[in-house]
Structure formats: structure tokens, C-alpha cells
Length: 412
Image 1: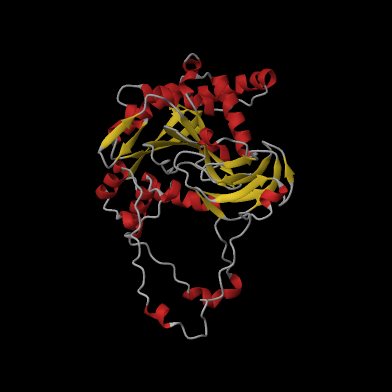
Image 2 (image 1 turned 120 degrees about the vertical axis):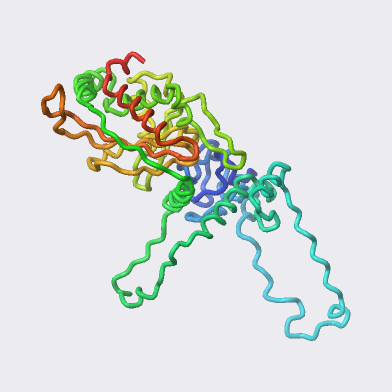
């Protein structure tokens, strides 16, 4: 018999939502057949059967599971028949409603064994630095071991709870009870809420500007039919924007936009690789797909990968590793058909996020004459602890330079 427990399916993931069982209790299953789907803060993960046998469901759909929790088992009929819920608790002490024997009444209570704290020296030091008491932490690691994420999560909650956030009053609801509906947040929505709270702890600033996208528009419209016919890929502005972002990140003075900030050590973690995150709207909420080593790929390769990742995201077959380890994120507000300027939320723990908006026909001045041009507004939200406004302007100017010369981008 094989037990199926919730294990670490990705870096930093300590819990999941048991979204759906794809087999019934008692079904005969084959090795590698998908048994159930676990929704994490990154993606929906399909969990396969480890062996051939009969499936026994332990955890129900819609429940939250943590590292080490038993979700189900697969084995022979004899092996799984006794697996299930815990035995019922006794109705009361063995001498309920009766006088207890004197020897039992006089027996001293056994001293409570102090809780053993399982944590590495590095985790203990982090707890001291963040003023977190390990005795109050419930570890999410194997056998209750306390992990770094447990410490950081507790410290982060402490920061949030000390803020003067107005408490929602339910008093007014009583006047409108027939016109109010309370909707529980989905697991994905709760995860987004937590991520946004983490992002909000970043001291941010925003730089905004306009790009003359006339040439970019022309080249995409020219190449789009050919690319779709020959390669079956819809060419958009996004691959060009990714290329321009990477070129700007590589310029001297802009490297820190491709980094993270370690606030405990006061260190900037520069990243010499370029994994570009792309914010994507799904029925469950906003998620981020990641194009790995985007600097090594052509316009066409980027277009193909964006299409493939987006399709896997929509049909819940995307892998965890395809949704993590981004170094800089782009959110394409313009693809939704509206918006002029916005303030995107930084994808924690990154330093910057670029918001791309709708390209519009706009009167512009060229050679002293007013003509109609294609204007592309952008917003660059950045961590002001790591970079300053002048650096944001430098980065924005580099972005403008590259996107206003898309022919040069195609050669990169």
C-alpha cells in the first residue's frame, strides 16, 4: 500500500487546496493515472497514482491540506479497507457519572513534556532577528520542523496587524439583510490577497511615459499574417516589449531592476539571468507565467512560448516551475482593451514591474507638424529602497529607445 501525502510541490509552498478528485472511493486505478488536483498559490497540480491498485479517499474535496497531510492511499482491497477517518473519541472518561476510585483521584498529574522545537540554526537566527518567538510557531516542515517561510510569514502578519486598518462594521448590514450577500473567497483569491499584502509592504514609486509606437505597430501588422500562416502563432506586441525590456535591463545603470532586496541583510541580490514574468488573467484570478532565459530567445520563439504557456495555464496543465523564479514582470493592461495609465503592484520579491497600456491614435508633433501617431503609455512601478527616480527615468528612456526602433530589436 502507498500513502499519498501532500509534499513540497514547489519552493515555498506549504499548503494547497484539494480542488477535485478525479476518481471515486474504491475505484481501481493504474500507476500514473491522475487521482486528484491540488491548487496551490501558483497553479493546479495533477497528482498521479504511485502504483496500480484500489484508491481510498481520505481528504475531501474543498479542504486545505498542509505538508505531510494524508490525502489518500492506493493498495489492495484488504490494505485500504481499514483506512479512513480517525476512530471516534470516547464519550467520556471511563468513570463518568460514577465516583472515581481514591487512588485515581489522588494520582498527581503528569508534568507536561515541553514542546520540542525543530529548527535549524539559520532559522533560529532569523527568528531572533525578526523578534519572533519560536515557541509560538507551528512548523509546516516534516515532523513539524519550523521553516524560514513560517518565520517570515509570522513576522509579516505582525507588520500587517499593527497597521491602522479600519475594521469592517457589520452593524449596517442589519438594515439591509435582504440585499447583502457574503461570498467566501476562493483559494486563489485568498492567495492573491496575501500576495498583494506582501507587495504593499514594498515602498514603491511610479515612473510613467509615452512611447511612439508607430513603427512597432507597422512591423507587427506587416509580419502578423506571415507568422500566423507559416508557424500557427499569433504575433503580438508582447515579444517585442520583452526584447526591449531585457535590452534595457542589460544597460549599465539598470541592472538593479532585475534584482530582489534582502531587507534583513540590507543586500541587493542582482540576477544575471532574465526570466520574464507575464501577468495573465484567468477565471480564477490573476496569475503569472514565466518565460525562462528570455534573453536567449528570438521574437518568434518568444511568441510561441507565450502561446504555449497561456494555453497550459487555461487548461490547468501548467507546471509549478513555469510559474516561479521570475526576475522582472510585465503586465499587459492594453490587451484587455482599455486603460490609459495605471500603478501596477510589484510581483514580490521583485524590484520592478512594467505596465503596458493600450496603443491609441494620438496627435503628436513631428518635424514641427502635428500628425497622427501611435502612442503607447507605460507605467514602471519600482522598489524605492533599491532604485531611485532618476534610475527609473533612465530605464524608461532605454525602453523608449528600443521600442521606437523595432527593426533593431529583431536582430537581437
